Image (cartoon, rainbow, N blue to C red; front, side):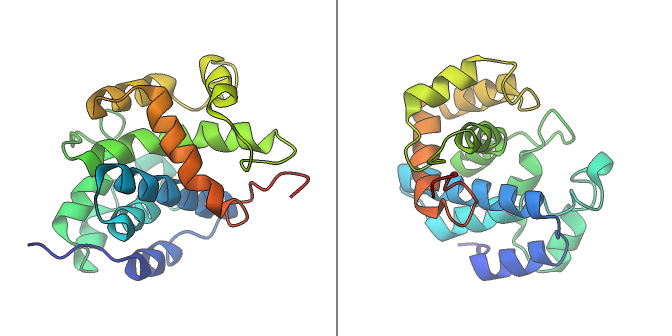
Length: 191
């Protein structure tokens, strides 16, 4: 069995490239959502979290060439090829042609955008994400003017790949992010 990426290595690699606070928060959002998705699929939580944390490795330095400066450096750093492939697949149809095939790849493709809407939704609430309910989230999800930069069609496509409805994936991610509200700045104004 191929070695997998561990969280300590992912954090070290990502933090060597990513310094902007909003990108670090995004990496954490995706990491915690990926941990919850791993639990859902009965997979290795830390492994999925590591891939989630590292997914935007080159974005800060190369926003217009995202994922063009990821594969080679990560392989050279010893990141297993399967994990590099998973990271590359989250840009499918946007900046790569790597089709998400595994549950981990499909999850990463989906939660990358989904966590953006969850974060925006939680930031508007006095108690942040701590009391965010699926019903409230879905209302915001359906309003395309809210968090307009988050690509809902991509999220819907990703959920289709997973064979899951959007509300189920959203609930898994919201519940997966709640325990880390303080770490991701989503405790709200009352937190």
